[in-house]
Image (cartoon, rainbow, N blue to C red; front, top):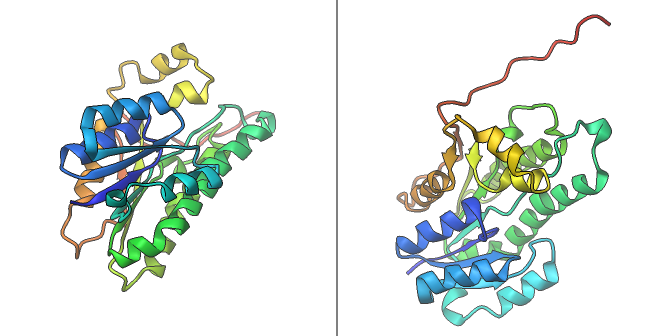
Length: 248
């Protein structure tokens, strides 16, 4: 039985990925800050899911949780770097610097730190890494500023990691989702349900389960195949036009 670790498993894509992998027979270490949600996952899947409660930004808590893993969860075959967030929608000149720092600490620093922590084991087991990036790392939009920058980092880090791991048998992939209806906008807007409802209204966005199925597909491909980057959007979403300021 193979073992995966999924960061940010308390909601959205992370929770759906945990469920998809466990349903497919994987053992899953589900990580996140909300103990009650992780406990519900563990209860639903019994000994196939181990709840590891920590904030990915807290390296000491993360290491303590990893060091305390039950023996049968310690040989990790797949790392799914899903934990991440966007905060704020303001343009850069009006943005909150603390929100920028939180996005960088979560989306960049924590991602590379847990990857570094697990890399030796993943190499030993010829495992895989799936990083959840975003189309925001490729296509800029007003208010995307640091969030888009962090996801561009994830995209490029994935490609460079793949280059460094050449010859090890480790597979490294980035998934770049477009619009997915999760708690993403609620977090970004500080709990504004109206803003979330407006964003998704009539758009037929992707679901967390859509992305989870994609993670599972990548994870279960034959070992000689690697998906470098995969960009996904709902049919209702495409690319924005250029902005033009007129009149001075």
